[in-house]
Image (cartoon, rainbow, N blue to C red; front, side, top):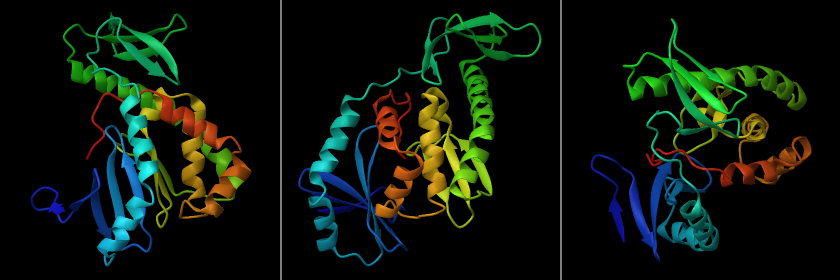
Amino acid sequence: MRHPKGSGNDAEVIRIGEIDVELNRRDIKNIHLSVLPPNGRVRLSIPTDTSEQKIRLAIINKLAWIKKQQSDFASQERQSIREMVNGECHYLWGKKYRLKLTEAQGKYSVYAKGSGNLELAVSEDTSTENKLKLLNRFYREEMQTSLEKLLPKWQKKLGVESNALNIKKMKTKWGSCNIQAKRIWINLELAKKPPECMEYILVHELIHLLERHHNERFRALMDKHLPNWRERRDLLNSLPLAYEDWSY
């Protein structure tokens, strides 16, 4: 069974057993399977001329893995929708803070206090949206400060150099790398996770400048330069997902 996904979109969905698989035909050489948060949507990126038989075989061979990924997402904790009110729980570098709203004396600001409070100094009539924007700017500054130290260290260790490192909110990936442009993006959400998680993602993306694919050579490079990368990956995947829907 096959049907188009949405109007005006070349993407299609094929049902294999009990699983709907979104097909993404692209000018690539290899088949790549993804199970996407938060609801375990299955996406298969395939060369444009891939036959239906090869598609079905690729899914059938990975059925157990797909179901395990979907089960993990189903049981993973979710943050509630952010209301930006006093006492609300927020995270910074893996630590839990309680939001404390104070009246701004001049410039708006955000501070993480040793008392466990995340203090947001704003005017009384500041909208929830603007409070969130202020908090996300704080997260971005925290990440930039950390990455300014981590990037030179890891570029030197790996013998690579990126042309640009950017931070942005991403809905399905913790990081990505444009190999041709040597441009790396890191997900803003990583500011909420333990520092070793962001370092793992940075190293992962930098190693793509040495090896494009997630193959044996890629894993060997990860093992050599960051031996505990699997533990860091598992830690990241076990932490609460953001409140927003990651589908796109």
